[in-house]
Image (cartoon, rainbow, N blue to C red; front, side, top):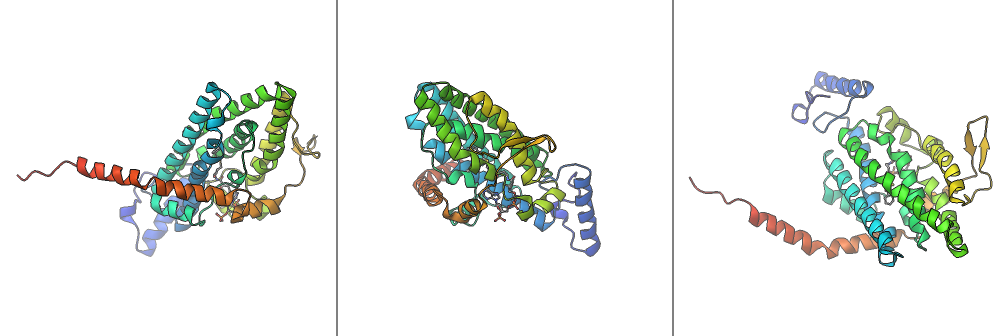
Length: 327
Ligand code: FAQ
């Protein structure tokens, strides 16, 4: 869309509104991007704010499980890599908050809604990181799932979101490889290290499958988001793609995936897999997972602790404003 139906031209007549709606539909049908100045239906705007804010919050809350291990990394090299990864996640959160702001959501408002439990973040970050191997499993499985989910979002219909995803996916790709490399080193190390890697994969496998969201039949938003080309694939399609990708990678690692029903199905051309515990998923997304309270409390505490920094930065910015000189 070229901005001819911009915010300032918002139609207040029936015919103006019909023209704006038609232009929106034509832009989507033509695989062009919707841009911030374009008129959009209110429901499209709300859906995007919900998804992009949830995505941004996931990146920010997602720094906690790994941040927990920075001081305990086993070598300087591993520590430098982990710090770089966690910093990348902060950057992803900031791009995504900026993308949501172009839709009219303020950062303060999104932050408040997260703190009040009224906007979600990914279920996966409500699980504890119990061993160093979890840094590998998060990289391999959690970033791996994130890539499978997010590469199609680079073609999302909303321009600022799609463009943010391009850089984010490049960085997630590095994250996934470092996780795989870390797990490979452990699984080819001592007996104890291999056992630690296997235990970690056992704990992270099923929650990583839940990252793709509920089954299609129980996903209230998928159909509309696909019609608007915000989402390009359904939750189940992406989950299956992820499983098919992980099985040969687990073989290379020499680790087992904890699912006895995992079996190649030549008729479907995919791996069959066992039942996912959707009751656990519902419990976690309703705020009652293993670490939900801890994650949100920590986020609120750091927000309060950082208040003086924000205030000082604002005071400095105000002082740096050029003083108006009388003519
Ligand atoms: N966790 O109808 P659907 C990362 C909610 S990657 C929590 O299927 P939709 C990188 C959903 O919001 C993780 N809630 O919804 C990283 C909705 O609730 P609502 C972040 C979930 O939106 C790696 C309800 O269930 N990635 O951070 C989850 O069409 C390592 C019904 O669901 C993204 O956010 C879940 N797993 O599809 C960082 C990707 N699944 O809002 C650090 C962008 C569903 O009605 C370390 N988002 N729900 O109350 C998406 O692609 C989509 O929003 C889905 C859900 C696929 C997540």
